[in-house]
Image (cartoon, rainbow, N blue to C red; front, top):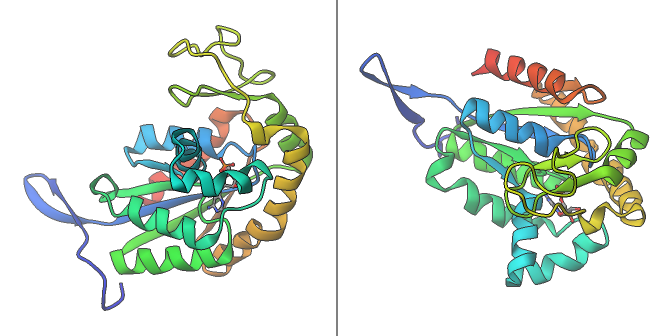
Length: 237
Ligand code: AMP
């Protein structure tokens, strides 16, 4: 903890008030690796809030806010939204009360400047970081994104080939009509993968050099991947 670090979160254990270590879990990996799916599972199992920058931006686009209007053209073309915008979003979101025990980041950081800013926020707050990269090849990513469908209402993610909804084109949880994300189209996906390799993949070395990286093979069933992630986090929590 640096000199500006804030006190750690407090919890009651056996009637005593004890300081608990706060954890930030960063999920890395190309689009289609299953970060959103795994973040939701970790959120449910560990009770830490999931922060998906893609979801925050898509909500802003849907609501037509100034953020949404500014982000839309970058997203439609598969490019990254500027770092200063994203860092502002994360600084605000992680300062809310529900993040006091820690949080899971899905889709942030995506560049070295974002990772450096996150390090600054975590040091100020006295939060430990665990970065997990879910590894898949480009071919798998392309195939998965082409089949991905999501529920615009409850956020549940399906894949028409691997994990279809029991109700076909409708969400089996809430019944809403499933949608394909506009940036999952074949033309945009190639660009998103190129952006991942150029701008986000360097984060794997960034966290490895700092002794913060855990690697999981993402080309396996969802349950196998989440078991590895939860085991790894369970040992660290
Ligand atoms: P995702 O849902 O994580 O695949 O994100 C969808 C799109 O939102 C990306 O292709 C980017 O245009 C934008 N986006 C999400 N997170 C970030 C981020 N951390 N930095 C820059 N752009 C982002």
